[in-house]
Amino acid sequence: MHKILLADININDIADSLRKNGNFDLPETGTKITSPSSFYYNLLLFFTLAAGIIAVLVIIYSGIQYITAAGDAEKAERAKKAIMGAIIGIIVIITSYSVFNTTINILSNPSSDIEGIQRQMDQPPNMPNTP
Image (cartoon, rainbow, N blue to C red):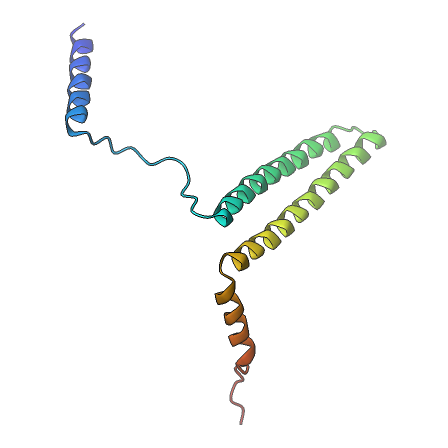
């Protein structure tokens, strides 16, 4: 009985102290989306992650189906096709992420990217000194 009362007093003291100071030190929530490109980038990350997780789960599930096919050629073939489809899906996910990410980066700051590419093309390549 006394232990419960002491714990209750301590919690109340802490709560009163926090209410008086007004400092809860809670982490901020949400995202700091400041432009349409950052919104689309966050959306891309979400769908890329979701699709990647689904593809990995399909590979695991199909692998289990392949192992438990027990000599049934039809089940084994379906599992192989599902694994191949998931691998192709992962390749498409990575490619689309790369293309979209590059496009967002170029569109978010086009002048600096184009100028940087032009400067790199204008500079002669660094050749080692040969005797």
